[in-house]
Image (cartoon, rainbow, N blue to C red):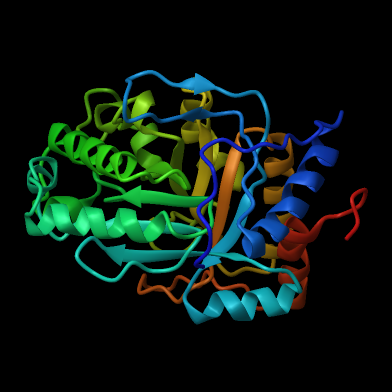
Length: 327
């Protein structure tokens, strides 16, 4: 998605309508256009600054960036619902700068190496390469550095401590800002469990938070595991999975992103999607992005991919509601 970089502050403002349903109608309609055009609108969140450690809260609303992950499956899902979708992709800091509306950048070196990277080093050059490439694209681009840092995979990879993660995150942010990147939203991504564990737990989300000046959005996965993976046979709503991180995002005046969300296959999944839409309607002013996990998964017995016409209809309604706004 190459194009002219967008300005740091949008010029236009959307008129807020009086009901949550009408508001999300506008948000999701604009989101469908946004995927193709890269238009950015102001949002009720805080914008990070390289020069200061404070942020300014705006009072208008950005459209939800709506999409999916799953490689080629995203285009197929878009065809099935008859609406465009943004793509969530997964990349490496030392690898190609992939194209997507949300990009997870995994680190190939420990966090302390990122945090201490000096000009001319391989890691610093990777940061500059990412920054210079992304700023030439149309935004918004939701960037998550080293997502789910408190998770088991990070521990296995021996990436470092919470303090080292925070230092690395701030380094990425500062290099991007210094290179003139203004179309990226820094999207801090944790597991949803990190917002439910007790403060004494090493995974406790606030221990990993880089600070309000360095974060635009809070993001998590939200899965209805049901009979697979981490599930215990309970059929859980999206609201159940997302409530705790959403509350954290609201408390810090940040947008909330459903970086991955999905339900285990079941006859009730179409209704689960309709209920998910109701949850998004009720929280339209806080939800910044939502990317369904339309991808095969190695988890035993898990089947996230939408496959039925009823599911496509329910999911498509989120992307193409246009009751009052046409087009």
